[in-house]
Image (cartoon, rainbow, N blue to C red; front, top):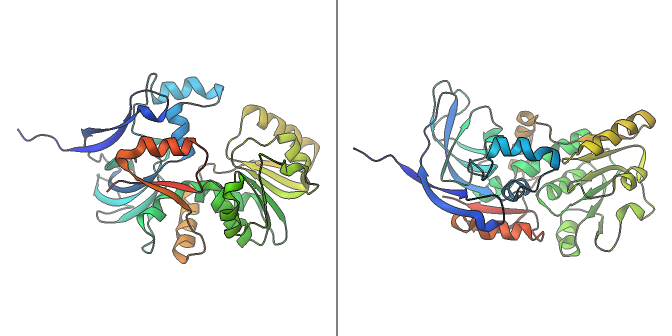
Length: 328
């Protein structure tokens, strides 16, 4: 009897530190109807991957996420971003064909910390720009899509003032570039060791949040993107212009309740960025990356077998932009 084909994949033995991650031999998946099998070339370590691994989630999400992902350990392979080549397609697949190089997000299916992954053709995937390396393509989807949604919802006009809190990470580095290209005056907030990189991306002013509160500088902003969700919401609101907008990818129930009241009592607005309208945004992102107007910032690269080390570095908070994992 011919043995079933296997592949290498990262599994988590529990929720916890990066040490729970290890490489294992697991069965190679076969695409079901509507699915595509991708040979993964590269992936990344995102903040979301680290949050799921450590299970540092908001209290109201704890139980539903445990029921969905696994009570004692994640039942699925982690990893959200990927670039790779379509190896096979299931019945009914019309969007992709074998041999096509694609990049994008695995969405809630995860699975990119492996040599192969099967994903529904409906997830946000697109043809990878031919002039991008695997590293550049793998580092772009999540941060790039959130930054594009920020640009769209903030409605940035030339000359407006924009603040980006957490500017040195994967989302923030794309947001700085897009805001500058829209003609904004950009204040980038992050640790001092990231300031040189942020200036190179176009930031007009850089602020070290460990030494100074950007909302107390006597400036007002037309838009504030709080990537990390740790800025004081009340101070951010007071630092907005009368028609300013506060945006975040990390809403909490208390923040949304305060946003409801803000909407009723002023012209200031709160928006949640990246609300799963990815298809058009991904095409836009691919075009910008292909033209060179938008670039991935890559700090470090690790092979798949060093995934635990990569997660430890991500947990340190020192990364500039993205951490890429080479798979094939």
